[in-house]
Length: 317
Image 1 (cartoon, rainbow, N blue to C red):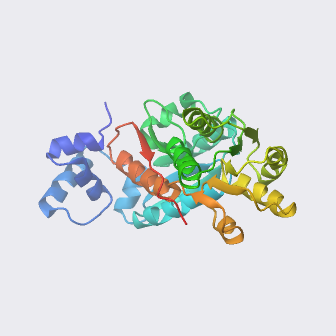
Image 2: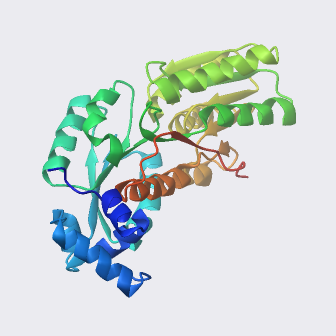
């Protein structure tokens, strides 16, 4: 016999799925007669998923798994900080795990979360992750930073952010020699997409492209700056705030104050130590909030897979 779903109960009772969900979670704002009708259908059909049953008894709410790439990621921590108030407001407990950019660890984490009957998952994706690994969670997972067909995904506007910063450097600051320090192109978003956007901008406006690519850390920014500086650019655009830290340390260490630095992303420590660095904040906090709200909607039965693009807020000065 086919197990009844929230959608089925809503159809039987001639109400919306959100109304059924509110009854299951013992929330207010439901007509008492409607509540009794829904509860009767639930009881008649033994619709008692473990977490829903506990929620109805007032013992606990839902649980979401959040799989980050690394716990020390500034941007991912910003996203999680934005997620937590929304989760707590909705009586949802988070379980935070770290993938370390390892697809096998993602498999292990998803299996564990499934055994624990977690209601949904938010996954910070990375290059090398196959969407087929996620197929059993397809209707209960939000993927951040990668766009997978058939899945609910949330991405930041990397292309728009690079163009925004290049417009500032080229059109407002009138720089004609803008170099780029980025991430190896094996990384499809932070590496490949941002670098390609920089090169396309240079082609469009007849700027000589000059790039150096390396790892995603401070040390790489410092080391890459050495060769870039020899070419005497007016400005250096960094693909991340981590690289900007390294570049600024190199410039300060060598007492070079003629090169303007800009970067994608905004780090409070960077702006405190180096307030002259021009930053463009990605909508990381907005990404976190959007991801949680989408997942809540999905576990309530509204699965409508598509990629949601979060625009970058305006420049921070």
